[in-house]
Image (cartoon, rainbow, N blue to C red; front, side, top):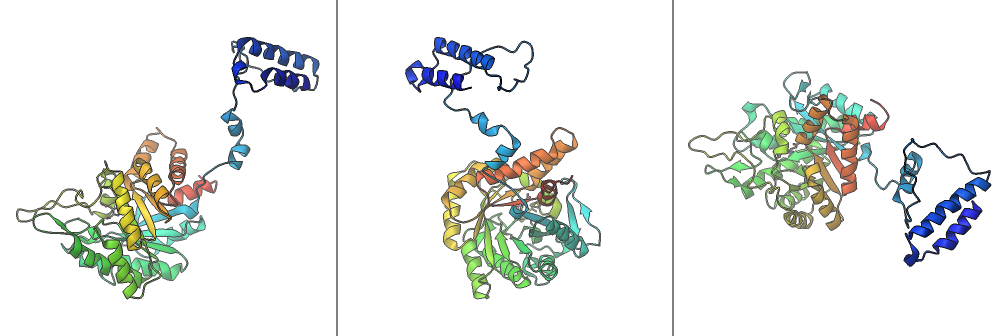
Length: 394
Ligand code: PBG
């Protein structure tokens, strides 16, 4: 080895002008062969397939593959990790009987029934280290109105679920959704005027009442997902004046008008409804959720939400919007969350069911990629399953 090292040093000398010169490489090969012949302490070389070309080593100043050589070493220098402490588990809750009900477009994910359905689910999640949940109630049609007052019914399903969870698990972090769509007979996040305009400031008034009622029920974090202008500041003020200065706001800051929300709207039967002759109901949410073509606009939303007092800012959907996650990460000191939404879950499930993708590997890779892109928190329907996988279970 000494002989080879000395010869190579002498020949290389880190001199750019002689790099990659053919004669020098040729003599390097000879030098190595000679060293191996005379040195009986060299370990036997592994065989190679017949036909492998014999070439001199490339003269590379560095070889990144050296740092990928073993699982031990890769783990020791890994830049990012993901675990149950990063997950916020969404809970769809219903109060129509005591059975958990399947959601056809979200295989493996159920609407839990109010009561043991919900607490068993959370209890299992906690046993795997997931201690943060976000609640989405399925409101029966007869409680939906065009002005969505059920959103701030102190005894509404959302409020009851918050109370149940905080009574059962006092240290559980309970997040809520603040938006009118699950309670609005028109299926929009805000109140729809007869000409189809989603009214902003009137909606914000009701969002404030909704947030306060959730705080009153014991919510730790209220999460406005409605995308009305000025709602973060208004909600902050409403919470503070009601004495809830300790309740946080996670803003759906860069929430895009996305077709990836389809399965979620199935889960809650909350898609925009068709209008009638005298009332125009827009078939999409394009006048309040962001245009998927826009990147800079996310900064504008970020600046407003920060100034208005958001504690956490979120990007939604997830995988197609990793550039936006990185943008927020690089432009705020606040924690950044990402929502791995229902359509992303459904796509993965569908491919896995067909045997076209390895579900476990792709799901864990996806969650890791959110973290690499800069997300601190991940809202994901894989929260429990991924935590089981990470614990070494099937
Ligand atoms: C309600 C809300 C939606 C989602 C979270 N909160 C639907 C929507 O904006 O239409 C979507 C979550 C998902 O798709 O997983 N405002």
